Length: 141
Image 1 (cartoon, helix red, strand yellow):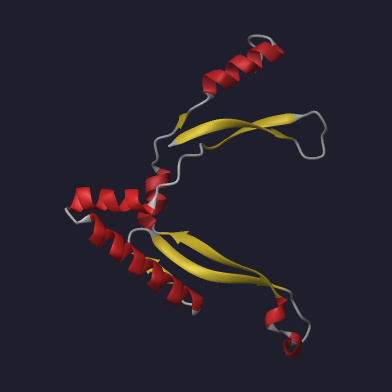
Image 2: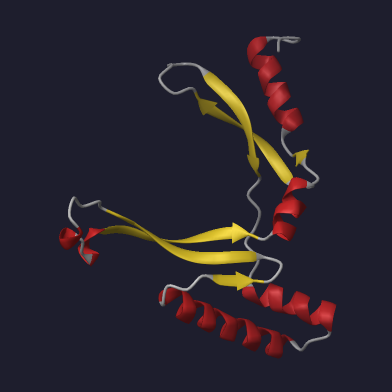
């Protein structure tokens, strides 16, 4: 997985910065590219792979909108959740209290293991080190 060094300010300390790593932004894989990959790996026609994936999307929307959690084998579980305003009495609770509805993803054990054992490299290391040396002088850590 490709990582990159990012510069971020230190909260409440002006002019101080820290450096950390984040996952490099990659392109979003299109639905057609995913269907084509499935076709080439499994020998499935692209139109059939696309149709199955579209039907899966419809089924996911249906089950999730009804409040069900959906487990996708080898990938993880999608679960609908809401944030709502707390009330002192249960009589005061209403749907107007919902602040935000979200879809939470819980990765499967296989997915967690894949990320835990990931092979990482820092994409912009040399660029950041060169910039650091120009700004701070060589040899400083």
